[in-house]
Every structure is written in structure tokens, then in C-alpha cells.
Length: 401
Image (cartoon, rainbow, N blue to C red; front, side, top):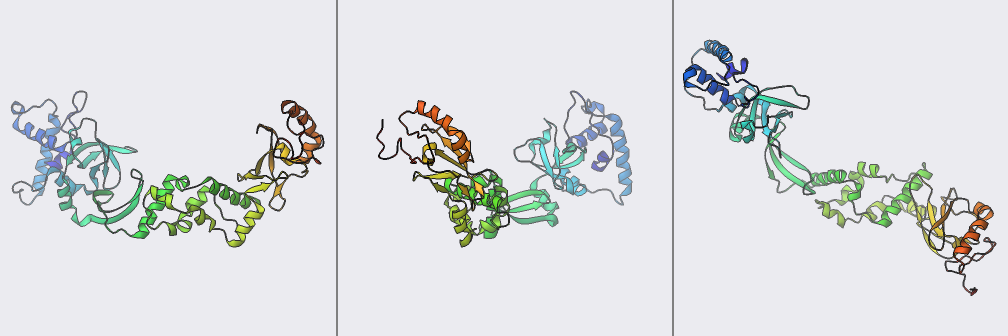
């Protein structure tokens, strides 16, 4: 009967008000009702012409058998279908009522309200060729134990170590699998440490390089190295850009991930030492010389330089601290001038320039006139190149009001 039903047009009518689901058991019942006659069955949704064709197919199938079937099959309807369609055993997707995944990996879906949605496992006998997922027209429920019984030769036990985004941790499990379906999963008591490190690396790649315990100082150090890599492309400076670091996690970070299995554990990493070890002793010395973190100004102050790879290094400094200096400070053996953000006493930018001499010669007199009116107590000499630099309101010893 089941074979005949699948070889002919559906015996259940479909249409508005006639949604009866995809269950093959319902179709077997409809066929029996048709055999009993209209007086003994509810025939409103049964296609009688289709039933007649199915009956003729049943007779043809029976004539092919050398002996009539004896008694009831020990298998469920789903079990019988699984013999014909082992690749169409399906498991409900997590978090969904109507979506399932086949052994082959393809997705299928039941219509909303289909009675089969209460079952975790199905065997799909008839579906369309939807681009993303097929729509199920005829199927039957099957139990997990029956799947194990029928597919024992094809069920594999695999160990899996992967990143779980929900718990932000590495999860190691032993899985019972049928093709792409995971039938059961249990925690792995003694996972392979190399696999755990691999799972943590996959997690870091999903989280992004920002998940590592960066400090402001370390980010600045990294940008200094990246800037030197731009300025000296033949010098062999390591690539510390985010894509490069993520691509190379196994080499530079993997050896330090022993026992690190959760995102919270990343806080314990000495990331500064790990990254600085990527530079040899000579490169570490050259970094301090060619791209220092700070510059000492004529006023005696040490000011931090801001580095951004691909851009000029920036130094924000009060104008008065540069008195007496004509040439713009430059890095990398004098090849890279610093972009000066000259500030007023209120720390507001009044000029951005990489040509300090040009500023003194062409712009300072006008700026001096304006700032002297706004900040009369501050030191505004006529000749900035011979004046005493200061980080104070006035140079020491100058008590003029």
C-alpha cells in the first residue's frame, strides 16, 4: 500500500480549508476508508479517483511478489520509508518547529500547522526542489531507536571540538552521527589538548582580534610597528594588522593557549610579552629609535606621539613648548616628519602643520596677535625662534604681569 501511494497522485485533496498535513499514515487511513466505502468513512478530503489508481497499483505490486506478505511489519510507516529513502531521514533543527535537516544536509520544512511538527524525526518521501529548502508534501514520523536499528551500519561516532558562541567557550563532545545529522551528543571527558587549542583559536577568530586583552599602551606599540612596516617595506617588520594576526593565530598565539578554554580566560594572557616576542632584540632597539612612543620637547616635556598606519604620526603640543625649534621633528631617520597639532593655552588646536619653519615665518605673527589678546598673561614673544620654550604660563624667572 505504501509503495502504491508513493507512485500515484496524492489521495488527499489540497486546497483552501483542506490542509491535512503531510503524514503518510493519514493517507493509508484514507485508502482504507475508501476501501470500506463512503458509508463507513469521512471522504470529504479523499480523492476517490486517486484511490482507485492506487488500488490498481497495489494489485500490480502484489503480483510481483512470489508470496503474499505474512502479518504486520515490525517496522513503523516511517521505518518502511527509511528503507526506501535512507538519505531523507530528517531531524528537526534546533529552535524551529517546522524546519528539518536531512541526512544529506539539505533543509526541508513542513507547512505551519502540519500535525507532524510534534515529531523530532521524520522520513520525507515527497518534497519539492526549493532553492534554499524543500517543502515537504508526504512524510512519516520515525523514532530515534528505529533509526539506530535500521541505520546501524552507517552511524558513526565522532569526536568534535568547537567554539560555542552561546557559552563563549570551547566545547568537546562525542557525537553519534548519521551523515550530517547529529543523533546524540555527550561531553568528552578527556579531550585532546591540541583540539581544544584549535577550538579556542576558532573562537578568537569569530570574536575578532579585539577579544584579546589589549591595553592602550600595547595598541600604540602595535601601531608603531605597523607604521615602520609601511615606512620600511624591505626591513622585515612583522605584519601586526588585525587580518594578519587572525590568520596566523596558530603560530604566534597557539603555544600560549594551553588550558585557555573560555573567553574569560583570555584576560590572563600576557599579550604584551607575547606580541613583543615577535620582534628580535635588534628590531626592539630599532623600534625605540625609529618610532619612539614619546618625543622630548624644547620645553623639557615628554609628549606622546599618536601613530596610525598609513597616516603621518601626530604630536599634539602647546605652541609655547616649541619656541626655539625651527625644524619639524621627524622620525625614521628623519624621513617621516611629524604632523604637529599646535594648541592654544586652552588645549584647542590653532594650526596643523608639518612645516614648523613655514609656520614661524608666515603664520605666527598673526596667531600671536590673536592669542595675545585672548591670553594676555601668557608668554608671546615676537621672535619665537630665539624665545625660551615653556610648558608654563611664562618661562621661569619671567615675572612680568
